[in-house]
Image 1 (cartoon, helix red, strand yellow):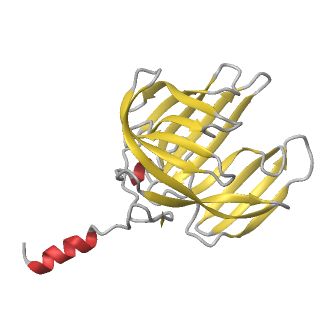
Image 2 (image 1 turned 45 degrees about the horizontal axis):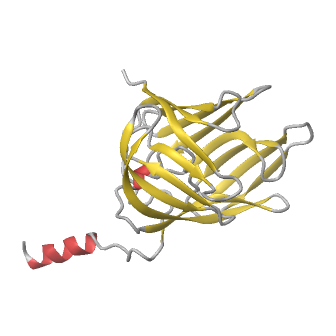
Length: 248
């Protein structure tokens, strides 16, 4: 290979040292395209009346967006939450569902790059509150059973990175928190659904210092297992109970 071409290849493949955290914003070239299609996944849930919740995922807008709908059967009602993610940028541009950062509320949020427009509706009744402003990034992401982390793979073990998430503040303010992640290892996983994967195990350091482990693959349903607050007071494991592709 000619010297200039060799140098160019080395430059393109240069990455930060494994112990250095890299910030990755929506739209970063590290996000690689995924085959989303349409599928239904069911996971264990300690809060559900049935012990499980369902996730419905499909591509929308001719593949430009990803729709994720959670349905959680409770004792007296069914919780429904929706998110729409930009398939290329991996920014969350719409969400609607229960939100408890400032109290028991139903929040409808719209994001357009750095701009946000959130409407907070008290679940028990009361006047709605609207929040608007700029977050200072190209958007925020969600790893909640979404394909976003999968779009960053493969990554070698000990790779550290950070993604921007919405951070509610006291008094109803909103800002960006750069949430830290660490690729621990690759691991063979057998799930109660019968589905298997050679998953990357990714550690997430939450804003409150709690640790979450996620088993992630580039194939649907992308998140095969989620272990929240490892060793903490809110420790909870969600495992894949059932998976069905809806592709024709």
